[in-house]
Image (cartoon, rainbow over all chains, first blue to last red; front, side, top):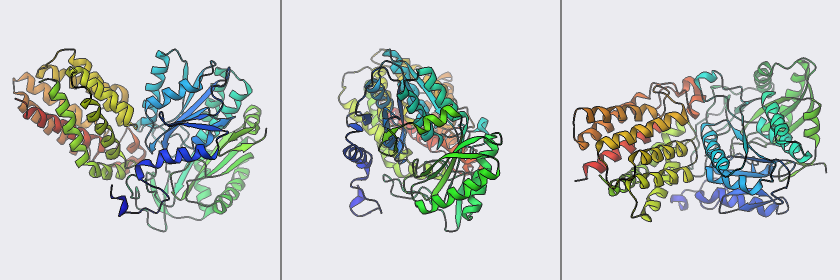
Length: 340
Length: 210
C-alpha cells in the first residue's frame, strides 16, 4: 500500500489493520469488562454467557466509537460485532456472538436501520434459528432527518441506539423476560427521535480522503453517522441557531405532551470538543423547557460518532418511570459507568 | 461451459474490481460512504482464494462457495446481495459438470430474483437492479433468438452498462444514497457500476471459452 508515502493525520499503523488493532487495544484497556475474540472479530462481555439472562447483541460498521464495543459490559450489551469502518459486519460475526452470549433466556439483536446492517443481521438470525437459538431482532430508526420513508431506505438508526442499549441492558440485568426487554427497546425507539448536523467531513482510514468537501462557514444539515452528506447544506449558524433547528426537528416529530419528562442526549460526532457540546446542551435545555418538556435526565458527550467529523446530534427520548429507573440502573462498560 | 468458466469469471471480476477500486470508491463517496470498491475488492480476492483450494467442484458448487465467501467477507449491503445472488445462481445450475446458455440465463435470473427479494428494489430505484435487470432481459432475448453465448453475453454487458449510465439522472430510493434525496441526482450509482463490471467480466470469460 502507498501508506509509507501518504501519511494521514491519524494515529494508526496500517490502514487495513485499524479495526482489529483498535479492538485489541480496547480489550487490553478493560480486561475485567470484556474480551476480544480475534478469530470471530467480536467483543464479548467477560462473564458471558450469563445464565438465565436475556442477552443483547449489537453491531455495525466501525468508526462510531465508543458505539458498540464501548457499551459491552454489565448493564448494557453482552457482545458487539464491529465491521470494517462504516461497513456492516458479516453474518458469521453475529452468529458467533449469538452463540457466545446465549444464556438460555433468548438473544436480542439491536440493529440500526441501514440496508447492510439489516440484511447481515437477518442472515445471522436465520442461521441462529437453524441452530435452535431464538433471536429477536429490533431495528432502531430514530433519525427524523430522513423524510419520505416510502421513497428511501427508511429512517436511519442513530442516537436512540445508545439509549436503547442502556435501558434494554438494564432491563435484562434486572431479570426481565425476553418479551419485557424487547418491549423496553421498542419503547425507546418509538419514543425517541434524533437529528444531526456536521461542520466537517471525516476521513476513513482505508481511502485516506474526506468523504465530502465542506467549505468553512457551511454546515451539512440532517446527517447520519457514516460521514455522508446530509439532506441539505446551509450557512454555519450559531449554537443558538443550531439548537433551534435540532430541537424543532426532533420535538415536532416526537410530539410529546407538554409536561412530559424526557432524556436529552447531546452527542458529539467525534471532532467537536466537550466545551461546545456543553454549550449546545445549555441551548437545547432552555428550548426544551420553553416547549414544556422536562429534561430530567441527560447525556452529553461523544458516544455515537463518525470518526473525526465535527458536529453534533440531538436525541430526545420521552421517559416514563420504568425507563427512568432503567436509565439510572448501574452500568459498567468502557464508555458508560455509574451506580453499583 | 464448466467449472473452469466459473473460476475464470470470478478471477476476471476480481481483477476488474481491483483495477476499478478507486473509481468505485469515488462514485460511492459522492452518494454513499466511499467504501464500495474496497469492500468488493476484499470480497472477490477472498473468492479467488477460496476457489483456488477447491479444484474439483461442479460449476454450481463453485458459485455457491463464491456466494458464501462474499457473504462472509464483504459486509455492507453488497455482501449479502451479491452473496445470495451467486448462491441462488449456483443452486439454479444444479449438480452437472457443464452448463449451457439456457442454464446460465436461468442462473442469472435466479440471481436477480434473489437481489430483488432481499433488497426490495425495483428498476428505477438507482441500485444494482438497474444494471442487472436489463442484462438478464438481454440474455433472455439472446437465448430466444438463438444467438451464440458470446453474442448474448456481449449484449447483456452492453445492457448492464446502459442501465448503469441510466442511473445518473435518477433519485435514489433504496440504500444509503436514498438519504440524500434530490442530492443523489446527477451521480452514477456505484452498485450498478460494479454490476456492469461483473457482467462485462462474464462476457470476457465466455468469449475466451472454446
